[in-house]
Image 1: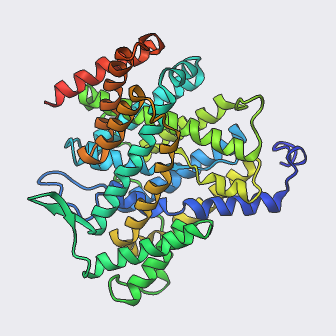
Image 2 (image 1 turned 120 degrees about the vertical axis):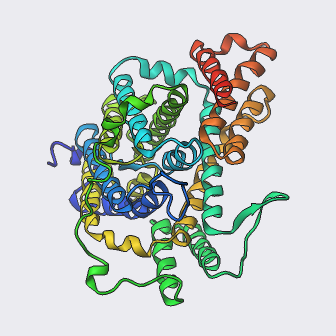
Image 3 (image 1 turned 120 degrees about the horizontal axis):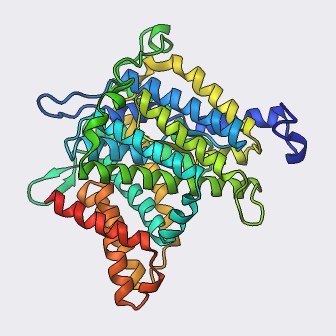
Length: 443
């Protein structure tokens, strides 16, 4: 094992890698509870004939997809990077595709499956570099920041801090109600933990918020050991639904949905791998060793996750927490996967993870993703305009896909007007046409 992961070369050992794996798990464990709440659209009325995803099944699917993806990344890619369903893509899946477009979650899972298969093909071919280079860095950063604002908006809405208003569309909620006060408490505690540099701040913030909710009577406490540890929930409600509804994906709307799943996962993964590799000192000549293997691990995990019943599985930037604790090899990822396996038996705790508990986590993830704003060339209007349209359109239209479409339409226009049309890759022109058709179809 030591020889396979080259412990001596990277100056590490089992103890360091174990602690790094545990640190990474704690930093991203919140997804085990946030993802089921998000994908099930917990507490929302979906209308007659539309069913919610089973929270227990999604909990299991979340953990299993994390185990599969993280093990692949550790064993095949040999990187100290953990994977799990992405918060931004889960929000897109639930709030845009299912709630906004009215597409059944079963069909949405089929879309995730197709995006994962395309990702595998791109990872194994030379097209990967061409697509990465086709989309300008500024727009990639804008998409990340826009998703951050969108997730934050969802967090405020779920917490009841922001509510609908007939006159102004949105307004501040009732800050004296118990659930809202609990969410605000969780937000303040999480912000404090994050500010002072506590690793796993989001997870610990959720734990403290849930405890506060139980102490104040806002959350029903678990009863006995059975309320904490229990059987692993069945995957039956979600397993294989992507195959059963595969024929439903052949519409222009689903093409845009699939492209969005693919686009966000593709560049989110590439960015995360680069960030982790840089921090760990694993880059060679400014290139990522074994990039193809790492991307394959990510795409294969997305396919597996779609089959068992969860949204797109992607690499987690929280892996940098483990790298900060000394993780340098794929053994760190194996340890993290082991903790996800152990977590499968704690599904009864889902009952205490209410929207007031998960909302602060969503808001904080938004804060972290918004940091990419600093990488956008705001001084150039031909860049600033499409970037801004991408960012602002996501929360205001309640759609990640619409934000991407807006930015990708304005980018060729502003660049051509500026006399920089020759700098635009042909793939961007193709996407320009696709997204024009997307808006026509929506109308």
